[in-house]
Image (cartoon, rainbow, N blue to C red; front, side, top):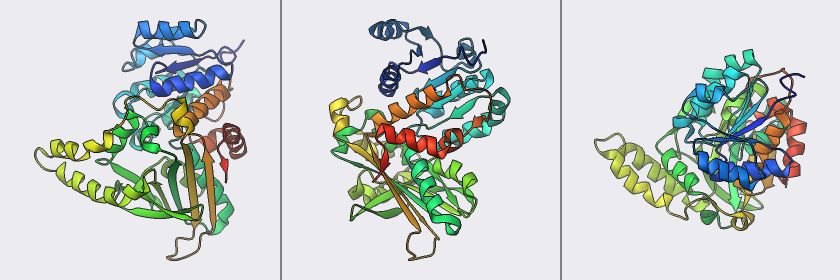
Length: 372
């Protein structure tokens, strides 16, 4: 029997909010993941509530601690962040062991660094590494791919916007609110003139048409700028925008400018934290099932020639479940799909390269993420 036939799913972070959603989705699919984390009591209790799942205590900050529990062909799923602080040892352990890897990060700088550091080693060991395999940023990559294909050879520009419906402020987690606040001080990689450049987050606002209404979104970043250029070499510009709170898009450009100015001054970080503190206010934890059912995710990709005032060549709109529900389902599906996968194409890759467009599109449709 080959190591691939003996492969297991290890879920790191199952006792957290996002990890719990992934665990629920895996169990619904019939998988029996091994739970991994640092809190032995919490792991044992969670494992017991789900029929006695296997569980192991690991230190996510030490690659050797994880390596002891990883075999070639295993699938390591992690939701433990912030990834810039805690994610590198986990990614390293997977690449070295030849274990497939999936994470829930929304931190594009982390994804960029993982590709730079571990892609070559993952290819050597046969590990398929899928960073940011959730609402951040699978829907945008899917919509962008579809729009670029529809646009054909004339496509030069992609604008991708992430939106949501429903009472969103109560429908996002404390962790997401904190990440959004912290992100205002971090640069956003964009694809500009056929190369990666860094721009100030929220430095620009773009308006999209959704269901006959115009909605604003501010500049952020996404792994679309890392993975789509290799699939579409003609693309000169790819920009990602966040439109969760359209009425705040323009005020956030001013806040972003002020925050970035303050952080360059002595003692400015404290003032910047005070200025952005209201962005973190909201319920603790994350939205429950009832609250998630009240919000839906919406992504739009607009492909064009880039000519000022020109009409779009193609436009794709996708609507699906809550960002959190969708993330849990996407990560569980990817993990199940990689279990037992024979050695083949490997490395740090995007979702289309990993699974193929038709397979990815069909899986997303089954989860409720489909064109509207």
